[in-house]
Amino acid sequence: MTIEEAVGYYHSLLRFGMKPGLSRIRALCRLLGDPQEKLRCIHIAGTNGKGSVAVMLSEIFQAAGYITGLFTSPYITCFQERIQINGAPVKDDVLIAATEQVKRAALLLEHTEEPATEFEAVTAAAFLIFAKENCDIVILETGLGGRFDATNCISSPLLSIITSISLDHTGVLGGTLEQIAFEKSGIIKPERPLLCPDTISPSALAVIRETCRKRSAPMITIQKQDITVANESLTGFDETYQGLSFHVPLPAAVQSENAALAVQAAKHCAGYSVPDRAICHGIAQTRNPARCELLSKEPLILLDGCHNDASTAALAALLQQHLNGKKILAVLGMMADKDIDKALLHLLPCFSFVITTTPSNPRAIAADALCRKISDGGTCAAKEDQPSQAIERALAMLPSFDALVICGSLYLAGDVRQYLQGRIHDLFAKGG
Image 1 (cartoon, one colour):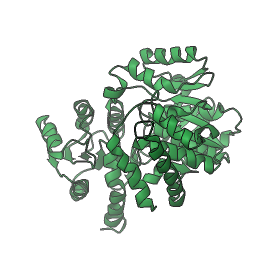
Image 2 (cartoon, helix red, strand yellow):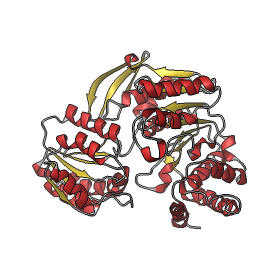
Image 3 (tube, one colour):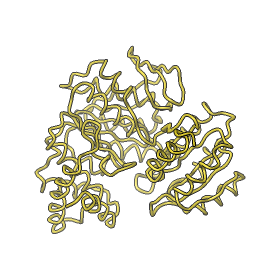
Image 4 (cartoon, helix red, strand yellow):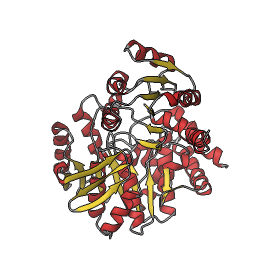
């Protein structure tokens, strides 16, 4: 099996769709020897912010000297990013070996269960790899929701984290904050600590609190009043939380809560020694591609995978705070099953001109349909069907603008990030 065949195997499972439930992943893991039971995990769910907290914790535990596994999704540039050891994407030969085992087990599974989904197969491979690599700790990000997410087949995490609750994936998770909170609270395990911020809506927080009560899980709430932020810019900010001061190299004030969650998580992992200097160093080393990522200062180019109400509102607030009054050009591509109207309500007041495009995903809204929607709302817009064509057009137009923002979907970010970085280097680093 080659690496292309391994990745192709996972992608081939897309035909089985998304099927919430734990019976298949549990059966698959049993056939593999239950590698997940050999792991010590921090389990993270949340509408937004879970990826940022996961990366921060990965960096913190590496800085403390622990072999650290990180499982996250989706990937931006290469498939191997989903499974990382000490911050590096899994090596091809390691992924191939795990994939061969998973594929054999998945074929056996089909005799007794429905076929495994793509996410279930990747999750099982990650468990195998983390166990084989003798990870001291694994940072495990849910894919969707929590209760029926494949990662939730772990029985007893070190602790669980819920980063935020807002409306997204309502067709699967429910149409209210309370329903979504119930689904995400599914990761809370008996007598294992749960961390969350106090800024979650009171009704959703009540659901989380009740789940903790029923499962005798200690609930630790991050208090926003305990967080102090200073020196904010597009390149990051300084934060003080519970007497500890550190720099967060991510250009979004919403990250202050995520950083506080990471600090508390590091301090509440029984059996681990994580000094303050490791926490500060780890957070300072955090890089999270396509999450308010500043690709270039001159010209100013920002890439963000925001795709729901809360994340598009956060990007709009960031732009209004740091680029208010500036002439901003945007490249925008979205999934058709998102609340596009609400996203546009947040974003369009920030943009002077929008180039729409179609991310390479079957769920994407076509560039021309999105363009019409934007034009009908009174914002100047044009379409380019291919993301690379949209980037080329934007770069040609950029001298007439103060900044370029590419946003609307992590799939769009994956389409353009590597290509855009190369074009920025060619055009600007060489003085072109």
